[in-house]
Amino acid sequence: METPVSFDYAPAPESRAVVSIKPKYGHFIGGKFVAGSKHFPTINPATEEVLSQIALAGKADVDAAVKAARKAYTTTWSKMSGKERGKYLFRIARIMQERSREFAVLETLDNGKPIRESRDVDVPLAAAHFFYHAGWADKLEFAGLGTSTKPHGVAGQIIPWNFPLLMLAWKVAPALAAGNTVVLKPAENTSLTALLFAEVCQQAELPAGVVNIVTGDGSTGALIVNHPGIDKIAFTGSTEVGKIIARAVAPTHKSVTLELGGKAANIIFEDAAIDEAIEGIVNGVFFNQGHVCCAGSRLILQESVAEEVVEKLKKRMAKIRVGDPMDKNTDLGAINSKEQLLKIRDLSATGDTEGAERWSAPCDLPTKGFWFPPTIFTGVTQSHRIAREEIFGPVLSVLTFRTPQEGIDKANNTPFGLSAGIWSEKGSRILWASQQLRAGVIWANTFNKFDPTSPFGGYKESGWGREGGRHGLSAYLKGVGHE
Ligand code: ADP
Image 1: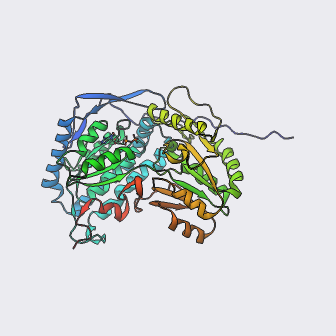
Image 2: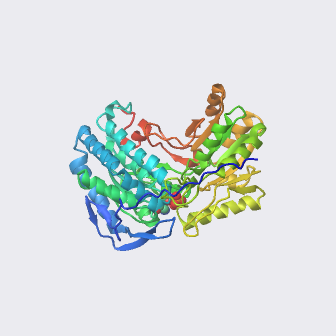
């Protein structure tokens, strides 16, 4: 018998020479970098190397940022024509493209995601958001949102660590296009690309105070949320913090959008193209280490194809290359933090104790840094915690169904409703299923596809409002629909 030939991948590390990381950072307020008082370390989760010291903004810093944003709003930005605002957005987009390698390397070092993803997904999509919204800046009255819309004023924006630069773009681009100024806080684990973006604002000669970036943890976020000088809050993060924010802004004049958690169903009907579906399942839950609010973390399989899908999936998962995020061949990088790794381990352990069957792809995990192998649980029932709670890691829970209606019922049996996937060769089934599913974004025969023109957001505990497209733009305007 012939021995099968196998090819190994030679190391293909990306160079980090393109970035220069300062030992310590301050905040970006009123167009200038200002020193912080207290600092905390930010680390590379793949190596645990301390990359830099990040400033922790307190009340005085947040006050200064809000004041700078208000001044820029009243004296410059609200007076400028949409056409002029658009030019700045175009300029920012082009500089992001020019410096894309720097952004990609920095994102991977600070976040742990594979360079292939930061290079091919995060950074190009972030630039695309600025290009798209640059186009809206002088056409707001033609957006179908009414002709007497106005910006809110100062927007306070709080973002998570899973797509640091991309979430910044989702927040800043529509806010600026609509005529608002912003105070943005990146997540405490991943501030570096936001601080590099501040340099881009300087390079683009954006008027001082239009974008302000303060770094810090949840305490800084709370100062922004509760600041009386802020008119609109935009938040992406956990449902838990989203609820705190909703309570805090309820008795105020502030407008709010929340993009929260998910537990998306990826439904495979028996007539699906199985090999394509396998790729979609892998992309659905292992993209970005599963640190994706719309990850397809519940695989809902029609019983007649369940065995075949699970077998093929395991084979495919065994080929996922886990390791150095800076290597261009890596598929699955590091878990973003020790806390997140512990959360994934704890929730996975409940899968074992509640009776599901765990299978992890065989792989050698690095000894330093935070790692979790691609894992699936079969025999999961709807009452298991791994079927109900967001795991935010490379872990897939597999459930089965007999009739299409049972599949839909299982998919909808969740407090969330951010996204869903349907795999079927039958157009009528796709249309039927997408009408039954209670999810903001539904993909058919694909998964995790994003575009600035397409609104993104959820039902139920997945949040309020939409980001992207005309719908996302409307969240940054008041008087929408009122003539
Ligand atoms: P995750 O579970 O993804 O870490 P969090 O909701 O804890 O999500 O964090 C998302 C963002 O919200 C981060 O920038 C974090 O610093 C910020 N944050 C955490 N707690 C609060 C709070 N109470 N108020 C405002 N922002 C907060």
